[in-house]
Length: 257
Image 1: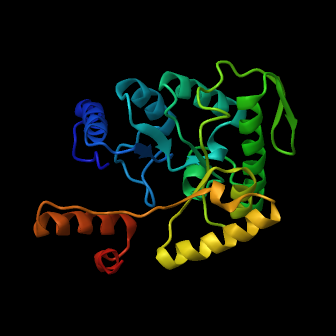
Image 2: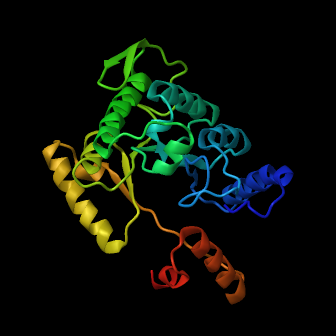
Image 3: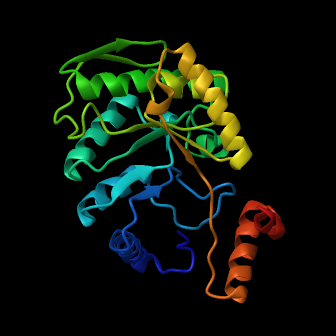
């Protein structure tokens, strides 16, 4: 959602009215991204914090499911995040989708004072986070000691309404590690690829499922793509040009896709 031309005092009402319209039109879910400022280029445009939105939308919607595409594991301690997610699942009446990835936006890490470890380390941290999420949503007193995170008899009440826990999305398309983590822990995956790429990722995931003794058909596979809609050609061109300026990707590249 582009809020850049909307006065600050009106932005929240626009978000609420958009969520209401999405629900009224019968869409299954609303998704927000987990960034502190715009991507892929930092700008002064407004960017609302992901889990604050989850909590607020849990109270201002009643039917639509609520998800993040996707939560950055590095930005919050996983025990704290699991507590927040569990609360929001209860607050929403069991409508939360829990989607998480290892994190990637190094500029944002640096801007907000987060350490930006190697990709391999971030993926190891993600796996420990997934373990903590599953333990804290299903056990009364959860204990885990990893290389990066530790919990000791952690109590998480109230537990989520959805059992055993809100659907766990392991996001990212890394074929050696991320898809392995999806096969091992996840309920859903999401990939930012074209159709051929989707087929390829599916084949890799199927092999990981065989290696992990996991039923491949248990895992939902989804495609992350974008649709730009304009009221007319001039409106469409204006939107394409604005997106092109923000992303440094030529407008014709979007049309070619």
